[in-house]
Image 1 (cartoon, rainbow, N blue to C red):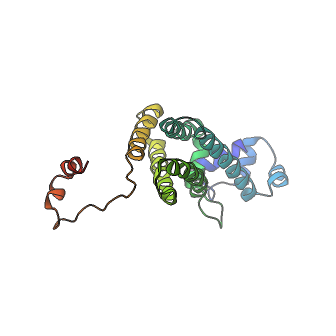
Image 2: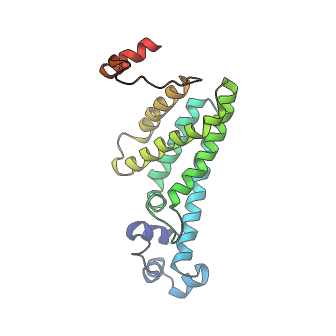
Image 3: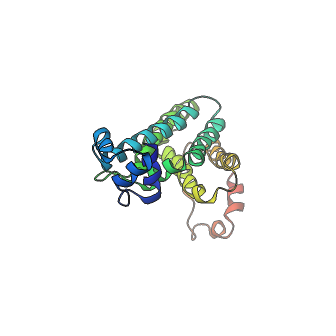
Length: 205
């Protein structure tokens, strides 16, 4: 499975052959077919293992602690996986089991469900609309996941700095949530808002 993960990450599903996997693993082709039924079976097994590892790492990181710490640990868990298991992340981010939806979107949906559940508890405690927790969960996970895709190639700044910055953005946004968010006025209603939104925001506060 480790050899298969490496080859799939290098060549993609279509560019990978059972012959190459067997050769690199030092086994015969029948061994691969016997254990996995062929290339697709091995690919599914690799993806399922990587999905379980990444989901467990992220969900485990956000279960306890202060909210800002949870965000930072969740980001750090994802980036650590990207750093230590790059091949696995490449397969999850860019690969897809034939005939099924993208694997990265699948795991993000699972993590989003967990994040939304935790946010709903916090919203209820603060007197906010817990029905909006799913929306905020989508926004938070989307921010983190897209940053991870960017960091896969950049690797700078370091993962700890990225985690702190993302936590800074997300936490300060969550901490300042309005119970009933208002729509910004349009240009005709308040031309000054378009000219200097930062100043307008300060006046609102």
